[in-house]
Length: 223
Image 1 (cartoon, one colour):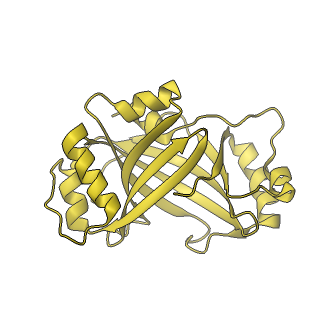
Image 2 (cartoon, rainbow, N blue to C red):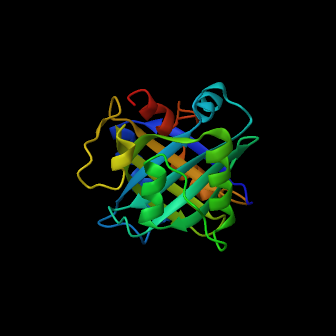
């Protein structure tokens, strides 16, 4: 599993306009964006005691969480994801799953797996069974993303964070969501082997430091 460095910085609307201008000058837009942005919906899972949430809040050094995610309303392409943290580094593992399987998990049920099921799916099912993982909250937001090939750098701006607690309706385009508090904007910077000075300068913000912003934790306040 490949770990990457990650910065998360909460910014305001004025910061966004300035940062976007600087980032666009040196990075290329994500090819998957539609009119510069794309919509992300995730369904997060946690234990009955909210282990993942508590470990995030407490800053536990080694932790993980599972989610199912799709983009731009396309429920024909769903991914099961495991996000891991270790010593401040992050890693993500993914497996494509069917809408039927995603709905099974959203309903809080455990499916029977076939012999060719991906290892990540097997691990998730094992932890659903042994740790009691349950669907907890839906997280919606809009993302604007930029790439820089040297250093495998990715800069994203996430905004319009909304949430819903009706997890069984995760795949429905009619799911009613509500704003997750004030209109927070999150800038994330992720990189592999190194962060080029060009990008470091472009995303630098005087007086602001990287923090531990979590969209999952923010939305759990409301669901």
